[in-house]
Length: 83
Image 1 (cartoon, rainbow, N blue to C red):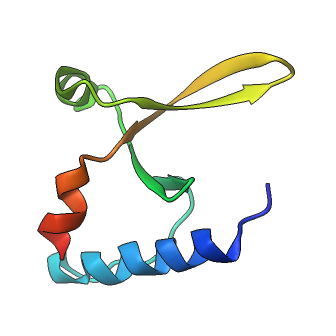
Image 2: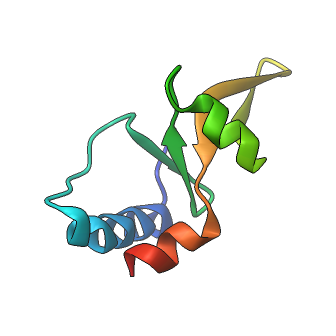
């Protein structure tokens, strides 16, 4: 999957915003940025909390099938909080 210039810029923006919570660097698969949306990795400990918020999961198509991953779209307020 090719990453667009816009997606790279958005990723850099998100990383810059997160510096206020501590040193943050880009690392594969903790978070996911697609279509200028931030998705956060969920697990057994926090998935119920994300589900309760009604946030959409990251879904992609492969060979005509929709596949859902364990990444949930971040709240819109997340970006404002980090800013």
